[in-house]
Structure formats: C-alpha cells, structure tokens
Length: 428
Length: 167
Image (cartoon, rainbow over all chains, first blue to last red):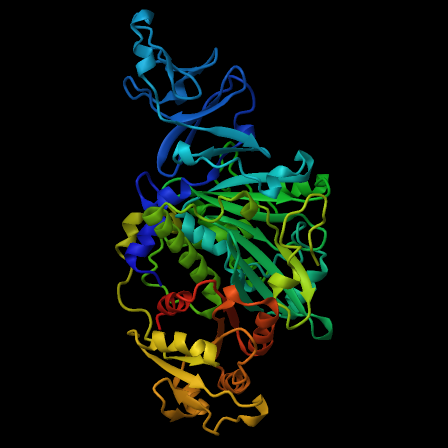
C-alpha cells in the first residue's frame, strides 16, 4: 500500500514534478536507432516524460531531439522538411538545427539577427548499442553516456525492441521485479519458448514450484533472489537485478541470451517497454534473432508499422479461453511480454495503490518503492545524485547459480553479479 | 465496438470502481529474535498500528532447549506469553534479527508457524555494517523458516514495509 501522495510522487513524471526530476537525472532510451535510419530521413515524433518532442538526423548524421512545435505558429515539425543540416517548418520556412537553434526566418531580413533569438528547447540525443539515448535534465549535471552491458557488446551480440504499454511506468516496472508471478502467469512458457527451453535451471523451476525469496539492497538498486532446492542440500538461485529508476535484468537460463527491460514514461498513463536480449561472449544466432523478431521470449509481435502490440486491449489481447482451460497458457494470453502487459494494463492507467493488499512475497516491490521515495527526497531536498547514474551501478548482470545453503547469494555470486567483458554469464 | 478491455481500463471508468473496503486488518506478530534487534522492535512498538503485537524472544543456549510452551517469549513490555498463542492470533509473523547468528528462537517460532500455516518474513537489521560471516550465520538460521528474507541498508525500511503490508 502507498498513500495517495506517495503514489502521485512516483507515478507523475512530467516537467516540474519530483518524479520527473528523478527520471531527468538519467540518460534514458528515446528511440531505436533504426527509427532514424539515414541522414535527412523523415523526423519522428517522440513523447517522453510528458513532453512532445521531435527527433531527426541531419545531413551530417547529427541527431537532434527538440520541442515538436515550431516557435512561429505552433505547427508540428513532424511535417517538416529535413534538408541541408536542419529541419524546416513547411508553413513559413522557419528552419532549426539539431540543438533547436533557429537558423532561418525567411520573412525577416537575414541581417536583422531575428533567427538567432529563436531557439526551441532541445535535449542531447546520442546513439549507443542501437539505441538513441537522451538526457532531459540540467545540462550542468549531465552524466556520461550509459554503459549498460547490452549496449556495450558488439552489435552482433545484442537485440533490442520496444513496445507501447498503455499504463503508467511504475506498475509495469513492478511487474519486472515481482518474481513470484512467474510460477503462475508464465508457467506454460518455460519449456516451450525457444528462448527459454532446454536449460537445466528450468527443471529446478518446475520441480520446486514454491520458491523462497530474498531481497538485498545493491549500490544501484536491488538484488532479488528466488531460491529453489537443488541437489545435495544446495540452493538454486535466480537473481534479478533492478537498477534505479527502471532497469531490470532477469536471471539467464542455460546458454540462452540474457534479457531484461527498461520502462520509460511517455506520459503518466503510457510508457515504453524496452526489451533487450544479449549474450556477453557470443553473437546471437540466426534462430535466436528470428525468434526475437517474431515476438518470442520477452519480445512481442507488433502491429505492422507501429510499436503497438498485435495483441492489445482493443482486441481483448486475443485471449484464448480454450488455451487457458487446457493449461497451455495460464491467463489465456499468449507470450510472456503480453501476459504481463495485459494484466498490468487491466489495472487502469495508474493503479490506485491505496487499495492494494500486499503480502510478504511483495517485498521486492515494497523495497523498490522505498528506495525510489528515498532517492526522490534526497534529490529534491539535498540535490543528491540518485543511484543508477554512476556508471559502476550500470555494470551489472543477473545470475543463476547453485550455492551452499548458508551462503548469502550476494557473496556467493559476487563476481557473477558484475558485468565483465569476455566473461560468460553465470547461468544454469 | 470497443472491447471491454479497452473500455474498462480508461481513466473515465476508474470512477466506477467499487470503493468499499476489500480487506480486513491482518493481525501481525513482530518478534525480536536477539538483543541486536530489540531496540528496533521497541521503536516500532511505540508507533500506531492497525493490529500488531510486538514480542521478544529469549536467547537460550540452543534451539533444543525451547519448545512451544516453555515461556521463552515475552511481549515487548515484559509480559510472558507463548508462541502457540501468539501464532494462533496472527495472520503473519515478522521475525527481526541482527547479524551474528543469535536468532536461536527462529526455529521454535518457524516450526509453530509451519504447523499453523502462518506466513513468515525474516528481516536482518544492521546488515550494512556487518561482515559476510555474521550475515551468513543469521541467514543460516532464518532461511529454513522464512518465506521471505530481507536485508535493508537502512533500518527505517521495517516500518515502511509494515505500512505497505497494512500492519
């Protein structure tokens, strides 16, 4: 349970809000690099943290992200002409560069200097790992570009997708650290999904359906350990990483790729669910990439030409009651990603946390909220940089390991929980 | 026609959600398992809660010296009580211990909770300053009897967790 004012604090991320200031402390994923595939390509409308923006790539390959609307009469620059190192409004020809600086106002004499006085709000936009990242905070405190392992490995080793989620970011992110739902909602997929099946760890999952959980604070967020019985009195641990504000990495299975999410607010009622899959020491296979593009694993099939899932609330998520009854899927919705999204969207645009009744196994969620609230307060009251900004906090890995029964998993998997180049993930 | 999923998850439909209470207060027993955790539990007991009892366990030489009736359990105010009675009236039990492995009473409490099918949560306070060896000793005691184990860097977490659980 959260009080209403706490719920508002964490779920509202628009300009001027405390939660918005928290998100504006980080580089966040804004677009896939493929959305701006070449110089002078069409601009793309982007809404992030309740701000309407336009992204474009100029003649020299520089990326820009700025206020969507022309300073003259408020026309959307999505209609603009991307030409000769600038985006030109088609209404009266005002032209802007990637920093939002107006370059030309054709109706005014060039000598007047009028154009120099016009500048749209803009944010840096930089490519790393096939993702275009932006930083929407105070330029004076702009951190270095992010170094999440999935964007630092060679391009052949990594795949990222995004989908629209029609709910607030927090209820989506909380699903990512709620390890206890896996035994129910996703139970049908462990042995059938091509990106999960075949791992020895799956047998531990299926033979011990009542995992026990441990939550431990990490420098950047939380380690969430799910413990099951293994051989000879040992424990099989699946350790999820959560790094503030909204990065998660799920424990790997066998030699499958490692995966996880970012949840980034579009506004207070929708968010982008970013999903990545990578392997630290090998290229993804053609079969893996084909499966990911087809919406397997944590990815989803999309409506052609959009980032909206094919199964969405307008078609009741293509729910299959026969599959539900037969146990092929637990909820009747197909695919891990949409199983999560359908239920999270059903909560409503912003779930009312004053009404919920949490239980002991929700401690991962409780602790994450606790840390977020603490970080917002420290940021607003004392200007303390929140966890997750430090690049060291980003060099993390999830892990699946077998450990002796009395060993703290943080100690037993100490090396495995850190991203190290050319070192295989700890997986079972 | 708009699907029911699309309609019911709109902001407009939120105002039609039933406003009646959806749960009764859960009775919670919060037990200090060792001297290191007693001060934290005592501070919690001074706050206002819906339905909570705050207890402290003695520290006998071994778990074998304890059974459900031998009077090793007290309320935080010093009244003797029994674990069987406390678990009977509780919906959940929160066990609090410091690092170092002095949580001997967890076995007797856990066994009684297991017998009565009552949920247990184990919390380690003061973990941030403790060594791995000390943490390991307490974990070895808590793990067999806790559905959830939590190690927070700040001890204020316990109070926040209890509020979140509607204690």
